[in-house]
Amino acid sequence: MDLYRQLGLDRDASDGEIDRAYRRLARRHHPGVNPGDRLAEELFRQIQHAYTILGDLERRRAYDSGAGRAPAAEVEAHVSFQGFDFSAVAEGPVAATFSELFADVFQDAARERATPSQGLDVDLTLGLSFKDAVRGGDFPISVVRQERCAACAGDGRLARPPAACPVCAGQGSQRWARGHMVFQKACDACEGSGRLAVQPCRACGGVGTQARGEVVTLAIPPGVEPGARLAVPGRGHAGARGGPAGDLYVTLEVAPHEVFRRDGRDLHLTLPLAVHEAALGARVSVPTLDGPVTLRVPAGTRAGQRLRIRGRGVPAAAGAAENTAGDVVAEVSIVLPQIKDERSKVLLREFGELNKEDVRAHLFAE
Image (cartoon, rainbow, N blue to C red; front, side, top):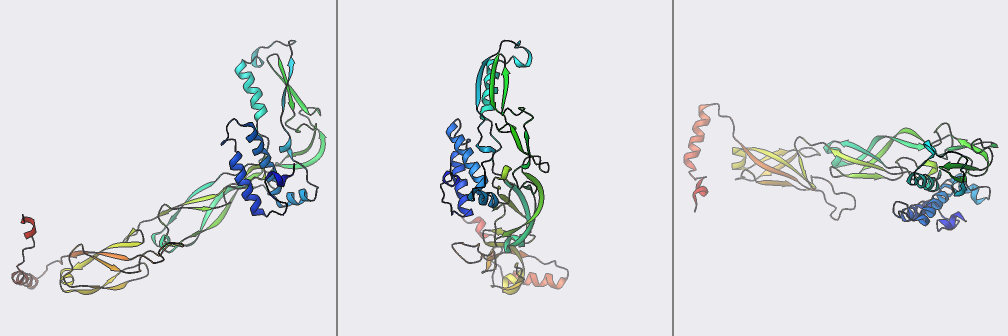
């Protein structure tokens, strides 16, 4: 069957269209989504086989030129019942119960062939400072993942001079007995041909992937939230037998700041004020992530009052509905100075005599 038709594509389909078609069809016909559906299993196998060829540039060229051949995925492992053999005693390990017997037969019949499979995702954690999370930027992260084997280009097999299959002695089929019942199926080693033209790749042990470390540059958007999980498509583990790679997921851990507390786009801090600054008003220096700014404190400012510095908070994330930065919110805390001389004590007593407002009167109001 035409491999392009299996994926519902034209022959001039782009690499991206091939990837999207494979992912869509694989999700639809995956055996895990269709348990017990033999037709879905067969369609899933054919879809994987088609993607093995069309998803690889060199194999696709060979297929389009007519030089490509169908790999092992197109060979079915049909199991056939050959009858009974009462010449041997059915005891010991060959004397299976009925449940063991049929489990053995149907497991062999349903065993997946060496077909491509999508690689697993990689999950990592990246620690960021408070400022880095607010400002964003490009950050390197070390990743150890399964990459396509360079020796076999991810196929898991290498060509070898054709020779008779030693497993089936060149017969192309295997026979075995369970109890007195005899079964036969196509040889797994030579895929029913009776001859071996390929051998497992020694570099990757026939899997098609090898572990490799690399550094991936992760683009962190400005104002990212602590605990955010960013995805890097296609940078997970490579798929076995040339299958598509999984994705890389990075969870961000943001360290707390010694001064600021974040609330959405706003940055909160506690602003200490001396008594005379709060009573008479003042201009004080307040820290921000971009450096200190001068804040005007109005006269009569009370403890707990909040003063805002507009636009000096967390910048808006890309694509946000409101493209404005947050504010720095300073919550006032009145700090009493240490009285070290008699003159200061006298002045405070005079201040109390001149300002006899009962600051606790509200506690007794009915």
